[in-house]
Image (cartoon, rainbow, N blue to C red; front, side):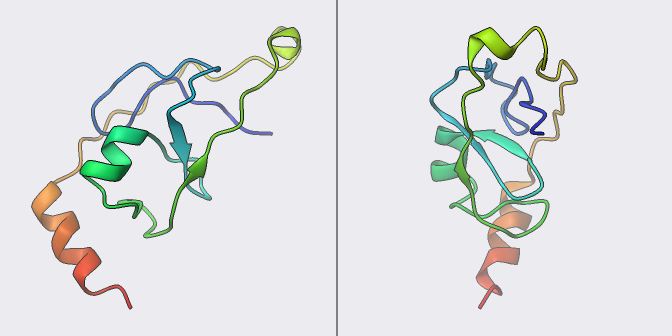
Length: 89
C-alpha cells in the first residue's frame, strides 16, 4: 500500500492526500509537479527513474488506511543532479 507522503522532498511543500500536483517514482519518492518539471527534469534524484501522478486515496478510507505523517526533506543539489542526468542513456 502506498505511504502517501505529506510533502515534496525538494521544496518541502505540503502535499496532502488529495493533492493533484503530487508525483511519485517507483520507490514512492514524492515531489511536487513544479519541482519535477522545473528542477528535476522528470528524473528522480534518488533512483534515476521517472515519475507518475500519485493516486488520491479516497477520504472514506483514510481512517482505516491512514497516510504517512513522516516528512522527508532532502533538497536536491541541482547542479550535481543535472550532471548525473546528462549521463543517462
